[in-house]
Length: 197
Image (cartoon, rainbow, N blue to C red; front, side):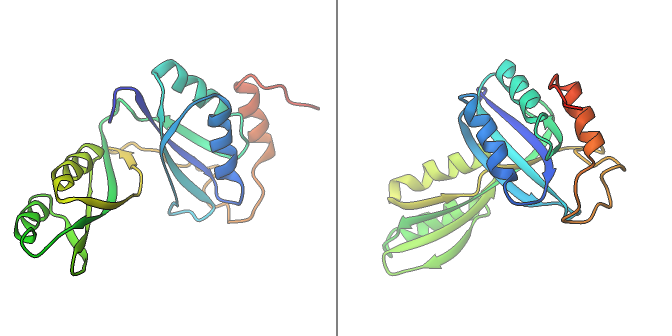
């Protein structure tokens, strides 16, 4: 991951409009999102977002403070400098005549990639790994002629026992239930946002 990228991991309420609110908050601060992935957690009322933003540490700290002002944001962790496990999936369609395929298959084997589809003039390869591994894989298949690329974006979590988990206060809240407004007001006060009476 680039030294200019910061990697944020968020737990957010799982309902319509949350992704838009989070990405809009970052956009309004003039920050570029280079990767964004979202998916449900083991609690279907909560989604996990992994966001890579192209900023330095001070701007990332500001983004975290601003994101905490959103009532739907439950928890945030800047995991850029933490020991993490990160993965990205890439599908790449490459030109592959019959004469080129044996060399291409060697690259596939080295990266433990898979052949997702084979045509008469092309192959679709599937590979997952860290962002650096994906970049290296793409560089090695580029000479064959890349016709199309689809990347999932980075998913990541901290290594070890600790991680981004819900507090017991948030666990067990079913999908569709309203957030705890008192806790949300406390969160906003802590972030320096005025709360009306």
